[in-house]
Image (cartoon, rainbow, N blue to C red; front, side, top):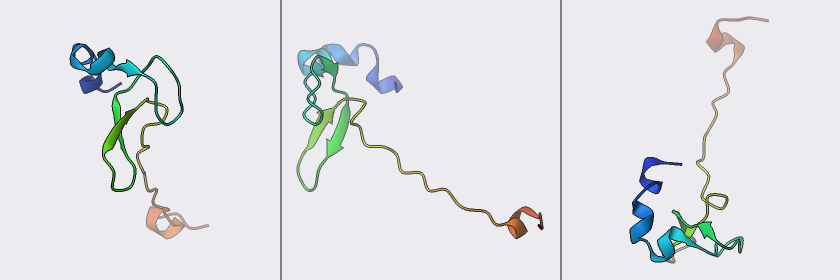
Length: 69
């Protein structure tokens, strides 16, 4: 869990950061991550429903590595 999602930050959040996830309907779970759907406002969701980081993998050809089959 990221540093900003641990510790005393939960104490100032409504329900101490716990509630029911609006996306997967799990109850009594930490709602720490922002999810923006369309043009609407950001809603807090659990870590299982948080937006995944998109990682683009670059395919490397044999000639770029200096290896020739």
